[in-house]
Image 1 (cartoon, one colour):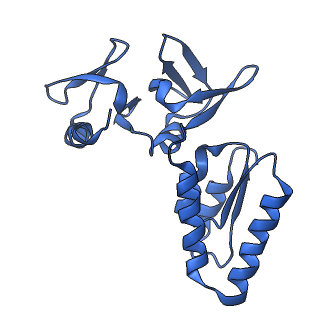
Image 2 (cartoon, rainbow, N blue to C red; image 1 turned 180 degrees about the vertical axis):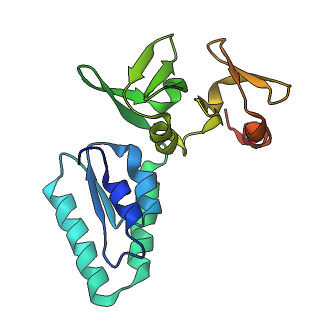
Length: 194
């Protein structure tokens, strides 16, 4: 879907009266799919047995409209995700690069691009807006501290007081915190499990 994705389409549908089975090559969107009440989430290449099981769930729901089936599917999806490291695919000039979310220190907006800073000093420039990465990483201890900066809270080594203050990241770089984000950041830092 050029310039859009399935989530963009679903956001436009108010009170859908249909079920959604996501099919994607990325496991990054599973939590977001749950928020859209997805019936199932199939990773490509799709296995025939998994597709048959998803269709069987749909048939059971249509027969008795039992919300417990949907709840069980969500519980199963969450159970499968626990303990797995989040990987995201970022578009590069020569294809896609798979990154572990835990290796991302911060993402910084640069007009219509985003610069991703990684452990080990590597930087990747991608032609996507920072907002897309904010949505993608929101469930993995990332927080937008400024209009132009999204940080991995697990890589914060120090917070320095000030009007908004600033944080020092594990790579030694400082990032300014906006005044309006300061209190929320401090609350989140208190909850981060390192």
